[in-house]
Image 1 (cartoon, rainbow, N blue to C red):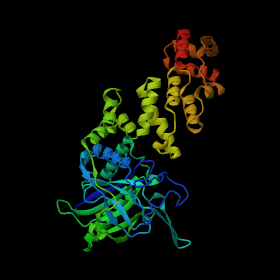
Image 2 (image 1 turned 90 degrees about the vertical axis):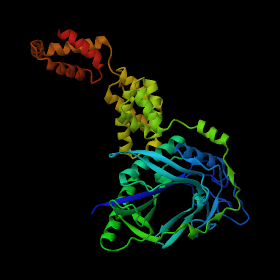
Image 3 (image 1 turned 180 degrees about the horizontal axis):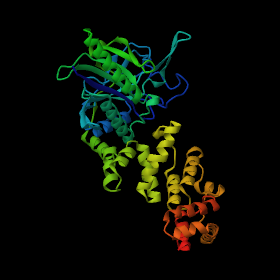
Image 4 (image 1 turned 135 degrees about the horizontal axis):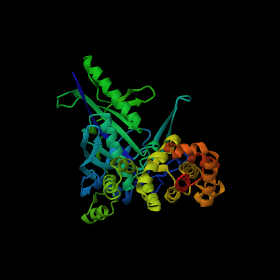
Length: 475
């Protein structure tokens, strides 16, 4: 009997505003514990929240990009949530009138294209962070993250595999980065996913009992968690036992999940309208303004790269997946005037370097002008490819000046005709036998002559000019 996995995601996205959702505290990541908070975001008696307009604008941008319907008159709700990482013992969120509903995102997988529904997007404040110290048997709390603005993007249960989930998250992350509403740095918790998963026998339409795995912030861990939890549920049912609706924690080191608590429902949180915030009206003018300011998104940029720049689909798809790569590509290719050379370098040398150093693309600080300069010099045969790699690596690590480094390390190719001619004549005179064989028809020996000349010139000869001179002399 075959089984089907049914998956829906709740994705929490920290917005890139400078200040928190209801107060003026900084949203900057890090800092000493409990230094980025104030009486408002810690919920001290007598304080009142004030909505950050930029948070609403960013939520609008995300909703419009994901083809959502916008709630024209929406409000906030109070979610009672008794945990130590929320000092005021409730969270300001949206339940009844979320800002966005009924959107979608299109994904591509090995099985083809698929549309994933977006049930809703709502705004809310983030909670603090608990740190468990097993040695001291203590739990410490840092309230710096309290009040950092979030949007929660809730999908429909439309995904059926880990591959579809990763494709969905990749597309969602890319879209949000292009919009500029979030840096989506999963390692910093800027994008976290809760996985709602159930299984059912193939052909059934009724949903099974779901579990939720919370706060997943790694694509690899998410894929493993989906496979592991689906297997666990199938084994339970096949053994005649029932799946419990509960919240579980995925332990990536142990490759298994563990029960945390029974799954709460909306009534457990005792939602009611937030009394300290008035409803917000989204006008037609505001929606028009946000719509007109939307940037070119990955799908549109990919199509343009193929149709206007002549890039292969694969190149365009890979480069547009990360906003920083697309920015670097457009800038560097404008400098060196060669789109294909630039895309090849980004997909080869650049991505290999980032992988080796484990640097996320969005943290890349390389100046596009310097990359374009390196490629231009290689294109004009001022330096060879090996020298270009050397310069590129140094620029990545030290932000060195391209021209200065090339000059100081004598990396420029020899283009002087007299020097090339002298080397060619010397090699020909020293290898009379090889010359005779070449003239007799052994044309493959031409590479031998090139190599010998390169040795004399320490690998710094302009290969095009050298080839032309050698052919002329050998004739």
